[in-house]
Image (cartoon, rainbow, N blue to C red; front, side, top):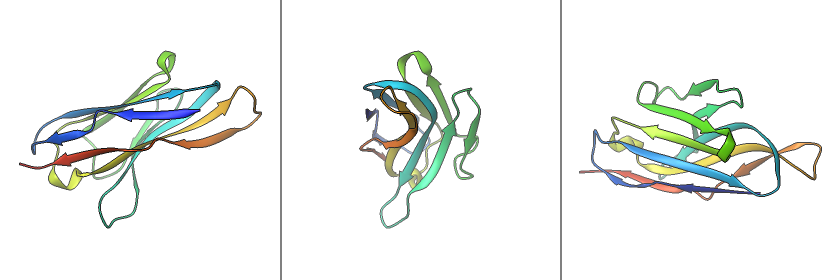
Length: 120
């Protein structure tokens, strides 16, 4: 099982960006999917999480600006980021709790991360 994130890049303050993360491999079921981020010199923090049923939760710093969504048919999670600020600059990682077809339990998987830079 692999998670492949894409969509990062350079954006001006106030701009928008959409991240995508697709899970692939021998997948039986995907439970929670989430985005985390890690800024230079800081600990990794939760940005947003979405359950298999579509319930969402957000970190305080992104509430009202970011939206997490998922397409279960495509095993993909998205992060729509708006009103971006310089402090949103970080490497963004996708995370998913996945049960493989050959397993009776789910495991935690991480993507390699995509860099988002907010700067004028």
